[in-house]
Picture 1 (spheres, rainbow, N blue to C red):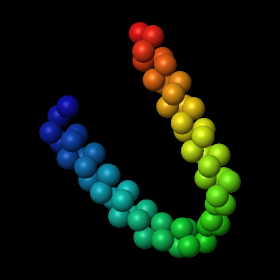
Picture 2 (cartoon, rainbow, N blue to C red):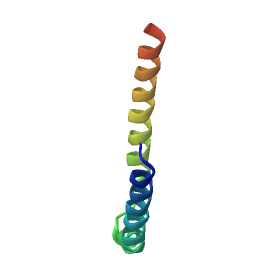
Picture 3 (tube, helix red, strand yellow):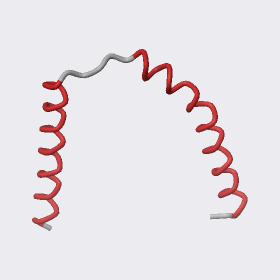
Picture 4 (cartoon, rainbow, N blue to C red):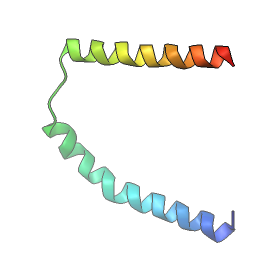
Length: 60
């Protein structure tokens, strides 16, 4: 990749972070908190996905 392309992408990434980070704190404060059951359900889904990916990797 050309040097100027890398510099341009770094500038765009920095601008993205500059504009989005100040908006994250109010959104986090306004969001609702998940219950224990919701977090356990999410953990179970992630565990199943990780297990499936591990299974797929072991079959190759």
